[in-house]
Length: 225
Image 1: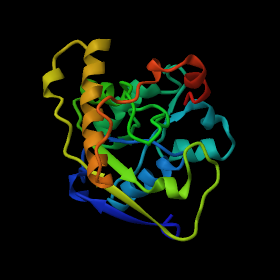
Image 2: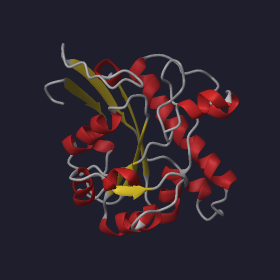
Image 3: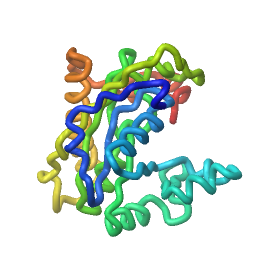
Image 4: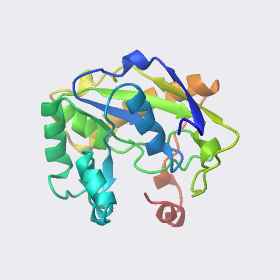
């Protein structure tokens, strides 16, 4: 990755150097997990992800995922092994960090702006009392386009990253974690991520965030992550 891209990381000091946290970045290419994994590593934190449980059944790959502390999650959100809830508890207890993409899959916004988020990041944060750190990056699409499987290594690309302040979720503390509360809290996280991306791109995002539910079922099913 260092040969393929140079990383310009703004406000790197905002990523906690110790203690548990959820890092919540935007998601628009298949290579994003590698990009944010490199960013976390450069900033001195071991990157952990919520990964599809089926990946843990692949020889060698599964062993590497388990040994590096990745968290298996089965399709539909059910748990495998310790499961995401137990893993989050361990994360908080051990002071680790996990990278969770609130969008759940690659954004379907035509211009790669963040779309409507899902509740995984805020649920972990609110249940465990740990901060959500928003982040945005831009430039990975030059390495690998959305839905592409091909990497463009030359010429060397520039990936800009901006780390935000912890999302203020104080308004939701002590409230029942029902669907309404989680949706409202997730919208706050997505607003912060979008604002960071606006700064990087130097332009304004659409006033209305892309919502897959507003589009036909064929499109939603085709790109389900």
